Amino acid sequence: QIIPAFKRLSDYIENEYVTRPNIAITSLPNGEALYNQLLKFHTSTSLNAAEIHEMGLAEVKCIQSEMAKIVKQLGYNMTVPEFSENIKNDPKFFYEKSEDLLAGFEDICFNKIPPKLPSIFRSVPTLDMR
Image (cartoon, rainbow, N blue to C red; front, side):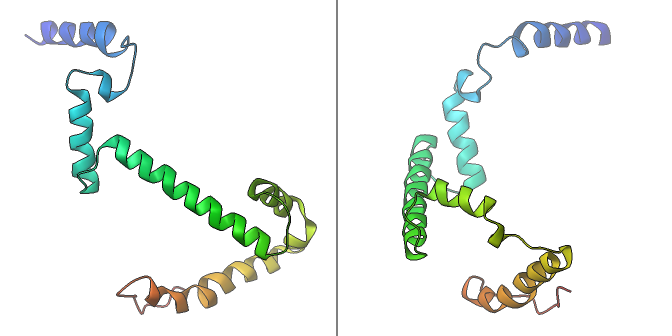
C-alpha cells in the first residue's frame, strides 16, 4: 500500500502541483473564497483582498503626501525619492566613527524612544532594555 501511495504523490507533484500555470491560491477551485477566508482568519477583518489592497494603496498615498510635506518643511525643494537619495549620499548624515554611530543608536533606543512609548502602548514594560 505504501508504494502505490508514493506513486500517487509523485504523480500529483509531477503533473499537478509543480506544473500549475499559476501558483496563486486563487487559481485553484474556490481559491478566491479560500483566500478571503484565510484573510479573515489571519486579519480578523471581513474585507476582501481587493478592499485591503485599495486600503493599502490609499495609506501609501497618504504617507507619501506626509513625507513630501516634511521634506518641504525641512527646506528641501525636491521629491521624496530625491530627498532619500540625497540623505543616503550627503556626508553630513554619516557618522565619522563607529563609536559615534553606536552612541547615536543607543541615544535613540534608550533616551528618545522610551518617553514616547506610553502614547502608543497602554502598558509599557518597566524592565530596563540595557
